[in-house]
Length: 578
Image (tube, rainbow, N blue to C red; front, side):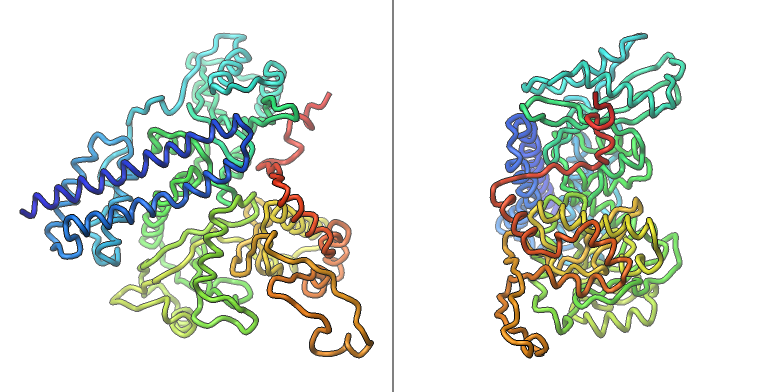
């Protein structure tokens, strides 16, 4: 009897996963059609809609198991057998790693804490993802003869099957080869017998671009490339640039941007290909970048477990100004920070816990345009209690008692967010002057501008809520006051009715809950003279309500701006202008 129920559990879960991935893939495949139609709002809608697919399918599967098999009443032996049967069902599966994660999500939803039921879930992968054949193949290989590289790249671009005509593909491919030659030092290397061009079969779609991703293979040398394809003003296709530098490739796949849409038959093969192009990029981030965030979380948790096993440093309070809403801690040896929502917020905060969670979800569903850090959300995350410094442990138990629990040798975080560690601007600005200060202030203002036209207002603009990435880019990371720009009311401060009114403790004008007065930004941002001068040189208009209202009008009119994950100077129109 137990074995029959276990087999039914396994079949129900694999059916639930297969339905999930079919719907996920159908949504991702729509990106090509939306790109052809220049339906940029549709692209954003699919990205946002697709994020919720996974949890919907998990809930459906949990409901079915409870109603049909009484899953809440089953014993441990049944669940252990269900896992073994499930492994057998995945032997010839094209996406076993994703199916294992789906199994974990369903089982832990029924049984509760993951760390108490490790025997019933996939703590490690049970099925290899090597050598799984995809249809179409993960990548196509082309073998150009001497002098045929130009024709090969033309074939590569045409093989993407877009119906829209290219404006001038021959010219653009000339630009691609010219840029590749420059990247290789101005001279093509001696051709080896295995010279080939390998290109992922599916283009990757995001914002208003399609990205063609591949590499040149020549002997033991490989040169990665990403070619963004855009629409020109006449609706024809143009190759905008070619990106070859590993650091610039990593920025294209940054999680501070919206997730890609791509039709992936065998995701593990695509991720393997991408990681060969970007060896320092964790597989967890690559899975997340293509919209498979739950698999990204699974791999992140496994990487974290390995890091804890191989390190000895304690969790400590993260450097920086303590937050009013979040308690933040980290390991010095680990490039991420852990954020726990406090039980009691600072006196100036009017939000509650559920509102904060909604703000984080808003950010996840928004095109982050390279200016907002992605956050992994975890529940019931167990960390070794012995690794917490006494000071941190005391603060967590005092400031967030409902969010943490000591359970044996573990400290369980009932709910937390994990983000890439950045250098907070309030710590960085005091260490720089001159050209570097100018650059950072310029970056900060540009971040506000780009967020605004993407319909995002950070709410709290303090330097401490923005940080520098390892590539020197300013990114926003504190979301408890974030709002859609179009939900805000930007106003000028009216003149005081009397001189005494200006000196009063209370304002002489009414303030609505969504009112924002940009001229007040200077008071809490520009106390340092050189910072003030740099800000006013580049961003004086950000201190006027008119700028923000104009952005609202652009958003309301349906404008979707171009956000390039590479410098303007890299674009062929600027690099090789006639």
